[in-house]
Image 1 (tube, helix red, strand yellow):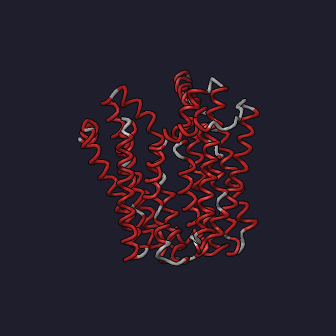
Image 2 (cartoon, one colour):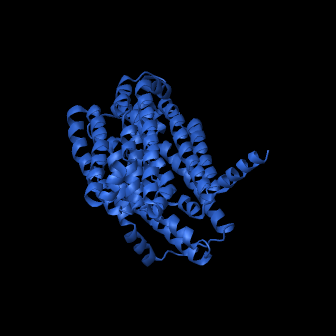
Image 3 (cartoon, helix red, strand yellow):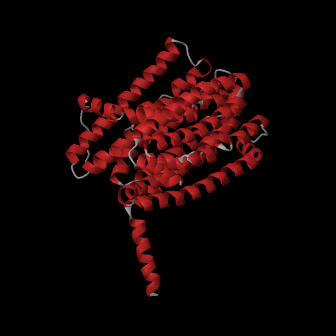
Length: 430
């Protein structure tokens, strides 16, 4: 009996650990986003059709790209500031006010870019109104206080709020989206419910946590933008490389082909979240081991890397062989083109897993400049190769461009590690 009790007590302490709770609630947010995305796909395809589904996703791709501008690295830098200042409510209030003000200003700038592009230069012809109605997502991103609760290590409330907003979005699809003409409201509903829940969270932060909201201090905002510029450009390059394919395809294909490809890409991009999530989970422990015990760091990294590769291979194999079933479930029809694209792209999650160790070692050793170089070399390769292959071979060419990019960025990171930190290179790969 006492042996059982001794086993339960450490486990109970482990559960109460704030870092472990952060990990669990981050996992809950990510998994709920994935689940809602999967559930919404067949609902939207049935309601608005494959071609409009492709245009909605194309508009969403543009918004997500601009959300990198809105985030501007704050989601990586701001949690650290909150953690350091959480005992000083006055200083924390100024930081919170400036971060939210900066993100809202960036969201306004991104909205202006969209409006000028649509109404001034007549760009995005096929999905102009869908894109205009999607701008609410920019302000939903700007007001999302996830970084604040991360810094406080109190993720429970924001994870519940995130799930609630996604459920409201699903309800909105069922109640209001019934025909292709209503496709412009899809992203609007996502932004509307997200923004509404975020405003309630801001009210909670002010009323119950005692955080005051001050007028923006433009000098402090400008300094934070300069400090975050490297993180912003790294995130931008990575996003263009990974998620820019649909935008490239839009220059060469019609709406129906976009819809076919978009269905396959959405499945793959959801599954490709596995490697970044593993990185977020292991980077705190990896960073600690790197500074305290280098042999233990390499042992830990090798153990994790082997498991990640096995899981990544399993995911890719399952998607490849289950592609017809996946497409049938999501679209309620046998879309042969989507099945073909999904079979080709199925290897992407495994290839993305190859680079988990390289990226983790770079961050643990604080080699941000190497990560920045790797991100932009990867982006340059994708930007050059994708239009060429897509122009010649259509969506299949784009699929191979995406696969090639995953392989090339792994090789780039290997070369950069070998050239700039051979201790890491030989310690891990020997």
